[in-house]
Image (tube, rainbow, N blue to C red; front, side, top):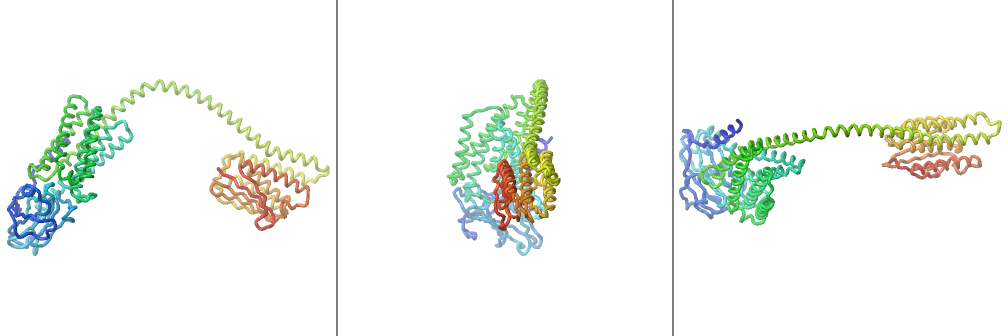
Length: 609
């Protein structure tokens, strides 16, 4: 049904829409005279009678430049608005009515504006329109190699001519733009499919042929030869794009038929490359002489297309036959467009743009058909593998259960070993030290000293519990109980504790390193409490990038200035323990004078990674 609707639409557009009506006067005779590129006024002599539509290369085959056309008609009522429709002006033109300029293309010399494919419509009225005889001058700029011409001119009812103008713009311009848009979208979709399945090279060749085809189609609506500086350069490039598109289309059909002819493909690709290089290097020959290579290319495309259609009918494959059906209509329409291009009859509308939706449907069916076949093969392959996969899954499940049980056992053993190490290295050392202190203490050791020893043991045990129970907690959370206990201890000795924490949220050192850092801080604050005789202590933890800075500053007498030998010895033992922990953390503990000159600073820099 869709195919018949498209055929009907194409037939309707091919029927001439400019049939003469009683309220429209068609001017089919004019006078013409040659002039040079810079002619600003019509010559006074040399005028000859010409029929419209007129292609001046048949009369002046070597004339590149300007031809002036003069048309006259009688106007009955100048106060009545009148429509003026110029069907065709190739390539650039300016229009004068009764000596007044009413339209002008942007560039009337090289590089010429390209308004040849769109008609011109004007609404005329007094005083520009005169009662009686009116004279229309059309200055056409063109090159003899590209069929410069002026089409018929219609004067009359504005509504009738405006409707005709809109129809022609739709067919000649809007449909060409729509055709290019559809083709580019299709090329993008097929190209993405090829990128996902590089082995399916036919889709890549189709996308390439569609891109070059759309570049060629831009000739029908481009308004200037940009980025080329001459009309020859543009026409040479467009012709080379047509050859490249034909080559890519031929290789696509070969791939579609699952055929590979490397020698033919190399020859075709070499020709396409030669045409593109020639268009860029010798545009002034390749442009005007484009028919030397375009006509054989068109004939070659017809041979390839008819050969594929015959092969598709013999193959019996549905996807081949659908694609062949989609090619039939473009081939039929291309015969009409070829007649327009070669000037075999007076038409100016190219109808190839009507066939892109049909190609879109055809390629959509081909993709869906091949995808369905692929899915059938995949389903068959899955059915063959299902039994083996089930057996492998059962064996794998048994193996995974055994491995999981073994991993769980190892994990529990590791956790117990880690806890034992923490108790041995931390709490065990504290316990041994406490026992030694109690053994060496006099029998009448004060009760408060015994309680202090037990509190130290309790605090060390809490550090082990906190760092082990919350292995994934960040440093800020682990510092909360230590900060509370240390602050309470220091306040009991009338020492003000100030904590300065900067950007440590989210820092996770792991259980072992966190415990070492907490013990280092605890030991440092304990030394401040016991030995410094300070009034204030500041604890700084600051993250800078992937580094963590740790400072403990007090305003006491200084660690190395204690006169009590026993006190100094105990402090030295604590300092050695802190240095050991600092090395395990990957840093080096520094003991410095405080920043203000009084007291001691303990400084450590470690990595948080």
